[in-house]
Image (tube, rainbow, N blue to C red):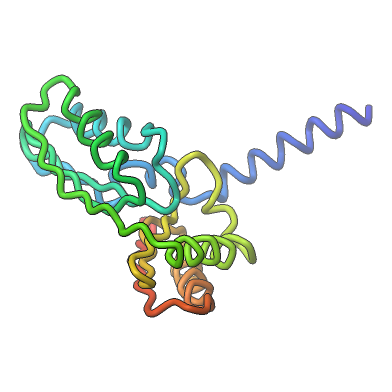
Length: 187
């Protein structure tokens, strides 16, 4: 009986986590700033979003966005590893129907100080309070971009309070020059 209760408790916890994790599905695609103008092939847009989130080195410290216009895909964002920029372009250009890829992805400077800030920001934003749920999954819905000591939060949160809390937590890290809160509230 004890093992059945434990199993039921685990399933209940998993259900609650999935229910309260805002943007679990939407944060991985269209609601992350990735869009498809009218007249574009929705298949291409879905495939581009899928290919980008499946990249092996894509992390909470990277931001990948795209725009599909007809059969042309434009890539945007910031990445910590140069290989991720080329991997993103290569993954997208092999999608059926894509005729041209324009890659505007910025490779962030390699800086030991920025890596220290990234780790500290991760602990500050996800380590306390209710924001830990945004770090769950292979592709968290909050991404922390650090460029020469300047921090930008991007992604999707469930409500204004979480957006404000993430901003407060990000601003609490010493050594940060500025914090830009580009988080969007779901819905």
